[in-house]
Length: 398
Image (cartoon, rainbow, N blue to C red; front, side):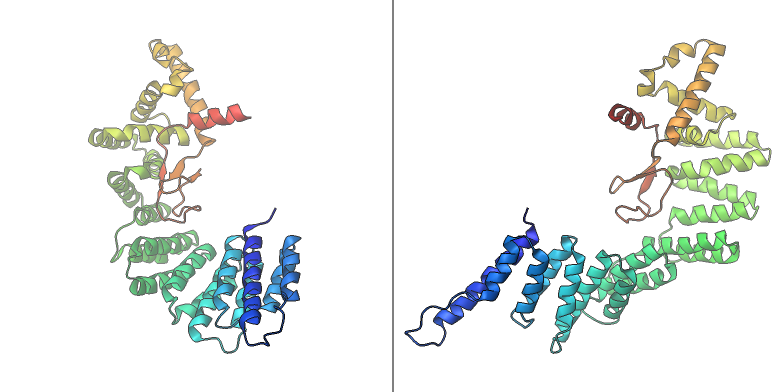
């Protein structure tokens, strides 16, 4: 079946044929001459297209049409079409053909380099794309676009130092704030340093992330993890509690750490009081506490167990399968039933996505600071309930 690119090539051949015929028909010639026939080259190219031999048609087109001021925009349009269609090899050849022209104007050369860089990026040739974008970022009318592309490349390659430099230049030239994005670059460096045991460097990177720009909760969470890993339990607890107070969505990350530290320090009573104060201040967090406890199999702490119990009693989908309200009236039998249901929910929660991007809907099992789908930063939020619908739908389709 003919593709969009096939029709475009056919249209280009017909236009060229018509132009050639018109020039021959109405140009300077003897009156008695017959109208000129169509050039055999045009007919040959159309024959390739009619047989859906687009590779041969493209080769023929590029040989037949010289890149000059009258045809260069046609070449750019064709290259862009091929890239959008995923035929990047063809797009690359077209743009390389433009660049090879010795008398190309500097503005057109920049346009061709920018198009070729996008071709390389689409083909996954990041090193080649980086080289061209860096050249354009050094001084061209595509400077802002090139710096934005470089940030994306450095993110993929996890070259966070280069990403910070490109991001800062883009802030100046582009006239827009990249504060959150750059803060995450610093946090990436901090986490890498902490993983390598260089906690002094990790602390400095976190400080850079928070200095002179809006605070990202990732920076606070990274600081808390550094305190935890350096056995500074008091600082870690203070930071984890502050994180929950400021942004309750991170309770899924902070609560397991809080429970672990209090339990290790034999201060479960203090944990109880802290959680009771949290729930009194913000009752809506009860469902998040319960879901986090279910996912991480946290039990044996009365205030958390009570949150889980209320959560299960108020879950409408669960109520269609188990009459927990009736079972709760029988003490021993009810406790056993609740324990079994809770264990089943833990397994169920572990098999379903826990986080979802608020921008594009991408789901994942763990917190991803940058969404792999839309590439936005800090857009994922945790689920607040077990996703029964997903599991039921999966069971039905199997």
